[in-house]
Image 1 (cartoon, rainbow, N blue to C red):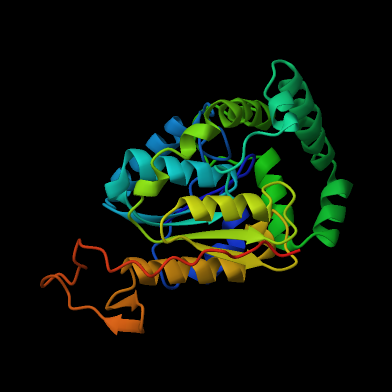
Image 2 (image 1 turned 60 degrees about the vertical axis):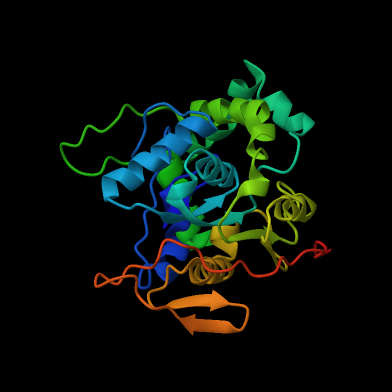
Length: 300
């Protein structure tokens, strides 16, 4: 499976989810273009989707379950649109895609307003974290995984001695590029959702004010057979605040997609799957989709 972080972010955002998945699944958690060790230039949803397909090709993975948080959910949706045969299932966590951009979104996409705001906020965070006393205080006050994720975001490290990697783009610049893409292309993410032919969980926090539960409910309603999962008392940062819920959704979607060796989810529970051949791979035909679960209202 492939874990796709949000905007801004790095693969470090998934550390607690990875702890819960790596014993059961082969997991890829790349830094998206413009962030972390990948560096280079940030891009729109199409460029990010192409990068995901390239990761799958390089890893020799014909089909994967995609898990996307926030902006990364939009990337997962775009991969499902342009390369549906590569997507076995989707977990969309607080994902963009169902809501029109807000006034703030549009303001942050305007040149040079967005760049100035992002540079002030993210550049200020980088300068603050350069002070040892600030770093130590954050490490004392924040959960370890969250403080490490913040440091990885503003101070991406090269993968090792002698690794020059791609040129590092300032995080604020990557944020601004993706903000313009969010405003310009969000409507396009809803295209062809009705044709998705894979199991999907849409996960939302009941107190999320960035991508609200109502918006996630609309996204789930637009995807045939999608399951809406509302996590009580949690906001937008699901990978940090609800790793158990996300890992549970990933496992459930993997079962429904037949990705767990020898088992698949059916309407009656879990049943045995006969291997397609001597190599034990599952058959290419998907298991019957469970009946749609709609009508769930967002938690208040």
